[in-house]
Image (tube, rainbow, N blue to C red; front, side, top):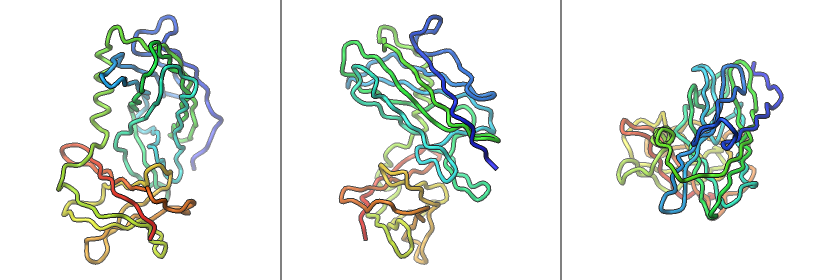
Length: 268
């Protein structure tokens, strides 16, 4: 049985003495688990830059995706203390879906890098963030990480840029036309599932569905008898009604990398 222990608090500063540009020192936050923050130190033409939370874990230790699952701990990022940064968006790689002890979760094992895109608006941007996520082996720990740094774009950090680019390669990108054709999705209260039409001959076992902007957990998809309709069981209650601008995203892995398809989601 998994056991929750008190939150571990970690304060990290990229600008602290002895810390190299583009990275913090490794900090142990759990037995054999260390974290650091890395930065590309590159300002892109659209006034964005990339940082990332890097987690070094044993191969049998995991953290959780943006929709963590039944026993997972949801990640939270608070950037409200930053200056000269208009927005911060974590960009999630494609996870592993697993069922253990009867619980469905979306997870990452071992070494993990979570890229975060920052929109920079000020001439002297300063990043201040509180990041909370779950680390789980025999016990599950909600770890809270706080870090602060003045972003410096004088010299790009190529090593950290490479690490971030490698993580971005595992982020689902929009699928090319014809790879996976899906129709408009709707919530079916009778079956308590999100249902949509689709046209594809590929394996559906690895498809992960999510309702955009919600933490609602959807189970593995199931075909109907015609093979042309997919139903994603809803775990738990639909606490809020489906709005007029709701959407659903399907993420799936291929030999060429992970892709995603987004379709409108309507109330039945």
